[in-house]
Amino acid sequence: MTATDTRTPRAAARTRAAATALAVAAAGVDLGAKAWANATLPGDPVSLGLLELRLAFNPGVAFSLGDTLPAWMVIAFTGAITAAIGVFAWRTAPRSRAAAWALAVILGGAATNLADRAADGQVTDYLHTGWWPTFNLADVFIVCGGLAVVALSWRNPHDQADETPSATA
Image (cartoon, rainbow, N blue to C red; front, side, top):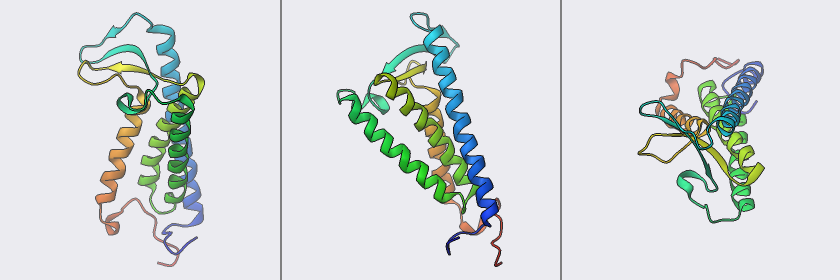
């Protein structure tokens, strides 16, 4: 443990295991939804009121940025970012369970979009609102996890009720 770690090694290991399981679960849910969308939605959108299930493919990243770049470049870039998030989540787990879980949700979404893109150079999208570009559940995980990380960064470190006191306290 480093001087900045505030939890026992056992608690940190449990948080890392839970965060890993959360990331895998988030990725699995989105990969399943993408498989369902590919099998069910081609040419046949489903209206759910404000939300429409519509199959689309995005060769770029958010808002189709970089859609003219070679697929290998986008994969390498997003792969590096995904790896960095994974390392950051791993290192954050001993200090904050909440931040580790928020980062795990981001990691699950980023990893599933990366895996989807690696298959054919594009990401499968299936959620459409009519006023926003078509997106997928992984994008929801990334945005919600990012908002949680931002919200957690605003809290006072002394008010972190979800933390276990250090062994020296």
